[in-house]
Length: 55
Image (cartoon, rainbow, N blue to C red; front, side):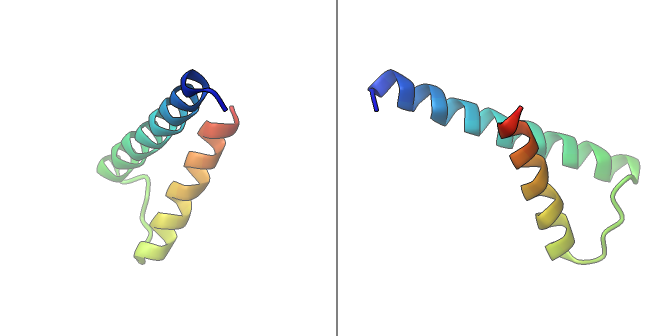
């Protein structure tokens, strides 16, 4: 894998994770996410990151 390709892939994953965290925080502030356990929140965050990476 070339250096530029690795940088592009790393940046894409980082941006997707950042956007997922930002969206999750926005939903929490508006009361959209009412999970009582941190495991549920972590699962939702992981699913959001995967959706962002796949798109």
